[in-house]
Length: 486
Ligand SMILES: [Zn+2]
Image (tube, rainbow, N blue to C red; front, side, top):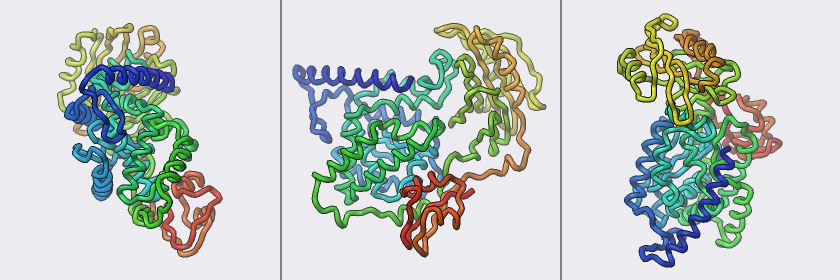
């Protein structure tokens, strides 16, 4: 589904380019892009571009939280600003954010808002690689890739989370977040990527970093891509397609840019040392699944999703989707409004028709629930909604299904709401995230020997990927090597 969407956009973009060139021929007001040197029709002024970026940044902040580590945010900002100062658009209000996300990803919004996940940070092995990623994202901004593509209409859809996860009609109603960012993630074309790589290369080199690091970066992305199942999507390699061509393209740039790269910065040691203690993988303190059961140690609740439903723990909601995509479950915090009032407001929405309501507690917790149906553009849905008070917070549990499947899913929907209860199991409450630990080798060592001496909670393949070596590879004496511990 996402694949076809991307193909369609590529076609649109080609047509758009042809139109832009045509318009450039007949119109005044054509400008030369300072980064790419190409003529472009400025549909969006710089101040509009910044405003669009700020709006989108607002959306991002409702879907992704910052990684709470001031040393990392200061470090990434410092490096990002240094690279942006070497770009053709140093005057933009550049902002660099480390996102608390295990996915290997980075992305840019128009106007200079750049995001990089802790997942990609933990997989890199030098500051020069980081400069490559940041330079690439800066390149998307300076070349105005997103500014020219991001219409206001797209922005309006951002929070709705349609795309590959849910049927648009249900998502429109549910306001499910989580997949909305895919609109941003799928927007670049192959040409855009090549151009951003070229610009990232330029900014790295101007800042004194060895652009050979981009080869390491792309190899790592390829490794992550082939190692990851569906669970770690979307990754940078998905949103920034064609990694194998990028290796060859980077090699060509390296061959032609200069003959002597000696003395350029890599900063491997200091970079890897900084990763000591970084959270690795998903952080169970923000909720985790064990089978269909969901546990939230910080909010101290648990809830069980029906067998066979596809589940997802998003930043602001936990959701379940029926196999046939005809049923949806969504749990989220419901604010401070008293639950009876929240229920009234929910049922008072123009598209909603209220069914029977109830004040029966859920597992001893105060609750206000109702059955309802709702008219959507593409048909009617039926479901249950419950507002529950627990631990000083209110929760909204909403279950809905298409009218055709409402009877089939009814027991599952009721059962899901009835399963919400306090989490008291000490073993479930007392979970910590996995973390990276860095070891300095006092002797040369194979990866296999390292694993034996310093056990990790990840597979040998993952450990190899993390350290940028082959699974049968080895490390020299004195090398800083990452391991992952609980
Ligand atoms: Zn890109």
